[in-house]
Image 1: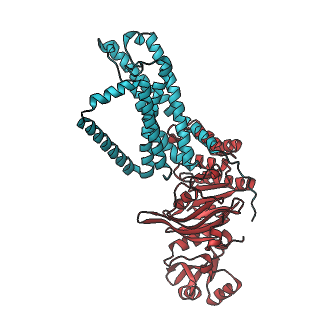
Image 2: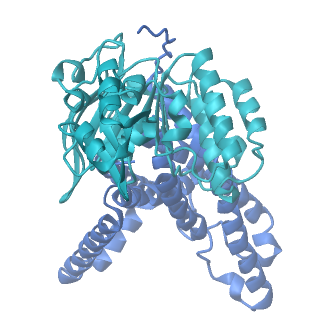
Image 3: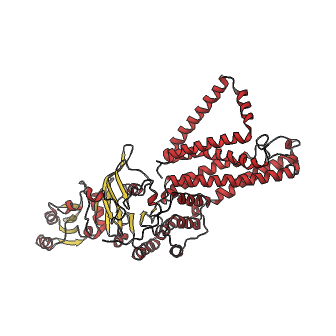
Length: 318
Length: 241
């Protein structure tokens, strides 16, 4: 990993078709009247990796994806997909696939129409793969799309997204209505696909624990701002959970960024932005507190619920 | 990190428009079935009236306009559903409108040929044995045989073209767009009517229409449709999908 958390314009404005950066934004902003859905988002996502776009409902994830795929235009800033401006760009046709959370299909389309249309629209579409996934998800191909259950509609979106084999595939909360088994099918199929045919995947989700193992990089959006853009491994190790007597926990966390703190009687449990280094472990021993690793989800929850304004990971760890 | 991704071949915009036309035509119930169900129902009702009401077959019927009316609804559905779907699948707005227009032109051409055949059948059977005129519209289809498909097709271009700006306004500005466009159109029509009345020009206007003949008049209508379609493009090119 070479880029690290990107906040500077050097990565955000990189262009050119042969670049290793699949997605780059710089100061990307979208306002709807007085509401700012996305504010000054600057990020760079490498090609050929699985990126998690994490954040709460209404954080600005969908807005970001819509701007990246040219469905909407930014109020300010720039977005680049495969080095190109995504708005109304014929050079990007068929090279990306955006699986929307609430996909609208033509009125009388049946499942097989959706698959046939996708085969026409995506030059790298794989019919065999589509058929296999349709089987796995037990999708009835003759059924009108409007008669599908919520979960089946989601599964259809997943099949299109994976079989399209587009260079960049963006999933916006693709699992709505999918049961745990079907979600696992999706995660497994996604892993298989990226192993078989490397591509850039952006997975917008708030089921962070479920996709933890899939993600190589995470972008966290909160209140329209990118609060974190870092390697998943880096994020996982960026915080620890401290448990022990309140006073000792406070002594340990003092001066560090506190992501979460709960007190029960005289015992406190806190999630704090620090690495479990040898020195920190020694300090924890001296203070009589326990250190435990935290999951990606805990870090993200901490980042998006912390009262203080969020900062880039480098600053958080400083 | 180096990723080896095969680059997809870039297809020409014309090819993309053709793909859009094919995908839009896959909405077969809307494009192939419903128009003829609507027209068929109108015909059956007319046949029943001709049988049941004495002398009814002698007058003309506007039943064929049901097909043109349905075409407007079809365009509204094709655009309002097709736009978010196809643009979401990476199709440009330009290819979307080009492809949809292409599909509608093909639809108008095929429909006009079918109507010409039905016109022939009606003439051959003297109004389906009842002496009525459903496909033989007074004045409008009283043209040389080779012009028949044209005078059937061009009003369809008018109807479809006129619907496009409304569908586009809906996509770009939702209800506000439709209401504003409707109000503006209504205002334009009222002012036009008032102006013609003011100069006492009704008789002159109809005489002028009559002098144009069905072919030229339907060509003018089609031009209005094409202009409206061009207006729709101005709205759609910046619409969110």
